[in-house]
Length: 86
Image (cartoon, rainbow, N blue to C red):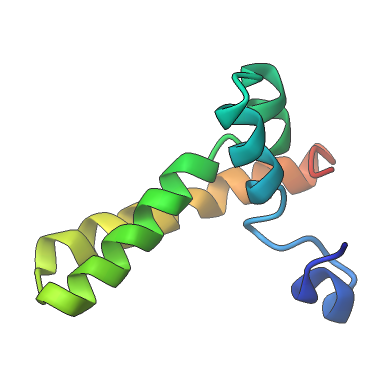
């Protein structure tokens, strides 16, 4: 199954491999977790914070979430340049 972003643009998205990474982490396969996407847990945490901050209107959660999301950009570029996205 291919993500919609990859299907439309023929290019991997910044969160590519997150689902497989989380499943590998839950199984205790940490090497596979880092292979698929080392930012998977921080991205899930950022998503949770963003949703929670919109419900409770807590600005610090939005700030932390945005920082995590912006930290994903250089990691994504690094993965693209070295062809590390599965």
